[in-house]
Amino acid sequence: MAARVAVDRALCLGSGMCLVYAPGTFEHDDQAKAVVREPAGDPADVVETAVEACPTGALSLLPEQDGA
Amino acid sequence: MTETQVLDRERIRTLFDLRSSYNARAGGDFTADPYPAWRRLRESGPVHEGTVHELTGYPGTALFQGLPEPDRPHYSAFSHAALDQAYRNPEVFASSPEAVDTTTVSGVTNSMLSMGGDQHRRYRALVQPSFVPAKARWWITNWIEETVHSLIDGFAGEGRAELNVDFCAAIPVLTITGGFGIPVGQALDMREALNRPMEIVEMLRPVVAARREAPQDDLISVLVEAELKDEDGTTHRLSDAEIYSFALLLLFAGSGTTWKQMGITLTALLQRPELLAQIKDDRSKLRPAIEEALRWMPTDPMFSRFVTRDVELEGTRLPEGSVLHLCLGAANRDPARWDRPDEYDITRPMRASFAFGGGPHICLGMHVARAEISTGIGALLDRLPNLRLDPDAEPPRYIGMYERGVTEIPVVFG
Image (cartoon, rainbow over all chains, first blue to last red):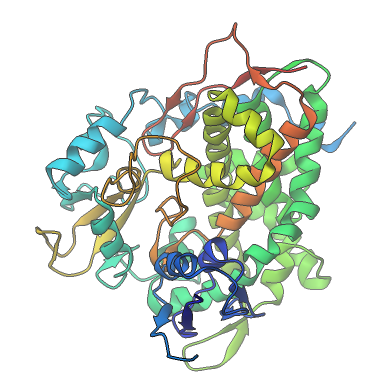
C-alpha cells in the first residue's frame, strides 16, 4: 500500500535526501523544493525511510484514509 | 597532450598523500583502527567529556572544525540517538560560536558553513538548485567524465597503477575547479593554497569579473546571477566577497573529502574480489556499495557544534559555550540502528547514515560526491579488465583521525 506523505515547503531545504531513498515518489521543483510526483511510486516502507532521512523534518506521513 | 597530463604527479603526491606533512594537522599520522575505541566509548555512554581524538587515544593535537578551542569545555557524542538530536536542533547546537559577517573574506568561517537559521537558509537556497540529484548529470558530463577518462588514459597501457593518488585524488579538485571555470593547469595551485585563502581569491577574481560580463554554463555564473532575498524582502546580487567565501567553502569541503571516500570505497571492494566481480557484472550493486562504504567508513568521522545554552543531551549536562563533537563514525555503527554494524554488507536495507552529516547543514555536495565516486569506479570497471590489488605491493591501510582515507591503492589489471 502506498504511503501518503506531506512536504512542509518552509522546512524543506532541498537536500535531496528523499530523492536518494524514494526516487519513485519525490522530485524537486525549480526552487529545489521536494514535491510528491507519484504517491504510489515506492513501497510504503521505502517512503518511511525517506521521511526519516529528511534532515530538516520537512516530510511527514499522513494517516491512511479508508477508501482513499 | 590531454588536459590532465599537465598535472604534476609528484605534486599531487605531496598534496594528497595522507601521511604528508600537508595533511598531518588533521591527524594524518594516526594509523590505528579507531572503531574498537569508539565502540567502547559508545557502549559506556552516549556522551563523554573530552574531544574525540583524546578519548580515542590519539596523542597529538589534531585540528578540525570545532578544534582546538582551548578555552571551551569539550564533549563528544557517540550514539546515533545523541547525534540525531544534536543535528536536528541547530538553535542549541550551532555550527558557529558567533554570527557570520558576509562583508569580508577570511576563509570558510564566514561562509554558510558557519551561518545559522534564516541566514543559512537564504544563502543555501541560492546554490541548492545546482547541487540537487537532477543536476548530477550536469556535473558528470561537463567535468567528471572527462577528468576520469583522461586520468585512466594516463595508466591504462601500463598494466598497473596506484589508484588513490593517481586517480581518486585528482577527480574532485578538477570537478570543482572545472565548475569554477578555472583552467586545469591552475587546479593544483588552488588546492595547495587551501590554507592561504587570499591566494585563491586572487585566482578567482578574474573569473568572477569575466562571468559578471558574460555568464557561462558554470557555477561562478550561477553565483554572479543569483539573487539573494534579504530579511526585509529586498533582493540583491551576491558581492564578490560572498562569492569568494562560497567558492572557498566548496573547495575546502569538496576537494579532500570525495577523493578519500572514493579511495575507501575502492579499497573495500578490491579487498573483496568476489563482491567486486558481482558489481562489475551488475552495476545496480555499485550504488549500495557506495552507500554502505559511506556508513561503514566515512572519511570525516567527526564534526562539531557549539552549545548555545545549558542543555542536557542523553543524560549529560552540557554548559553554554561548550563544544560538542559529533562522532558520526561511531554513530554510523550504532547497533541500535544497524545489525552487525562493523560488517561491510552492501545487501543491508538502505537507510540514512550521518556520512554527510545531518540537520540543515547536511552536505551540499553529497550528490556530486556520489556522482564522482560512481563515475570513477564505474569507469575503472569498464576499462581495466581483471582489476585487482597488486599482490606484490604493500596492501592499502585505512589511516587518519579526522580525515580518514587509505595509504595507497596499488593495483594490476589485464
